[in-house]
Image 1: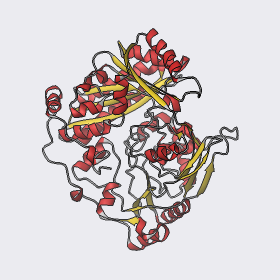
Image 2: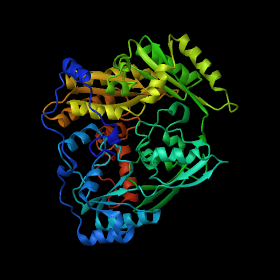
Image 3: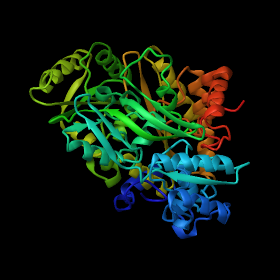
Image 4: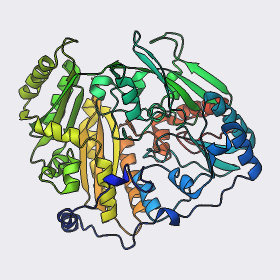
Length: 531
């Protein structure tokens, strides 16, 4: 992955001049004064771990798997939020780990955690490095040093139980590789978030990821049948049956824990038969409210497509459902008036209700509630560009725009209030930004809201965005939404999460942390609100 941006460096490209001109004219975006830093020029703090401790780490994981080189440390510094990338673009590597350690087994992970607990070495579990909420920037104070525990060597499909439809994976398997391995068995996870190209299965579980086909396959936490967690206090083996009444389900305590309670070393995941056919199509609604009402009808009454996404008026006009067209200057950038809804269907002939029957039934609901069918082209355009938005963000950052996303979720009755509150907070904090929104995860009782913001960079774009994010977070809390639907908590949402939990809820998390990680070495400063 590109060290100072997203994804495959070969796919990085400059914005075409007409797009840069539009940004100048409409938003006042100007190119940065200085060029971005090179990898070699990134400033790193001196490595703090002494030789004997490095040797002890190497005694567990092997000398070749304890790495302290400049490039390795840079590539394990922070995640991929806009503030993360802005800091890297000016050569700020101040959050770099002292070393990167790559264990090769559960036993090595457990032994490394024991050693680090004894020596007070902070440990940051590292999967694909795709966190966008400060989940990979630990607090250093009070620790001997910091290591990134890179799980890339734990990359196997251990077993497939085709009768129970459960597959066991190690946590370092990247999502595309998981799909390739399952395809050999005619299976799929069906989990395709925007981070799909680089994120790992362990990261999906640790952050409660939600994919673009969540309407059909569920969130990632819905897929976890069992897991193994290595902690400084021992090992937890969780998940003996699909459902149980044997007390609280501790799997739910680990899912979303972002590496603060332990390191996931194995996942037993529900899988499904890979579909033989997919069909995506577009619909236009007169307003965001009308489109949301149609989504609610499908979520509550059915039939629910596998993919269901609605862009608001601004996102539709800009054409963000087709980001590859914007980034290339293609004619597909403009999405026209109203609100664009994308519906996607999957199926296999002879298995279950036929795809076309489900599509026609859903289309009847959408048409009855005011939808205008646009055919397959908008759906196919969305499918082609479904993983392209982070690349477009890199191009916009290079052009001098601050562009970032944030998301929340709420009950249907409260969604309009939540939508308005976040938009007004962003407009108030940034002046005249471009604020876009879409709904892409729906439930019987509510839905998510995913905002994208574009504004000119000021003299300190990191502080600029932090002010806007604080205003939006306060608005979310005040309006009764959750601080995150699928990005996670990290450091960025920790204080707002504390308000959402309340003092007693935060105390429960600290108690669990104290039992599983008494020395507090696991991802310190992340997730858990302070007292």
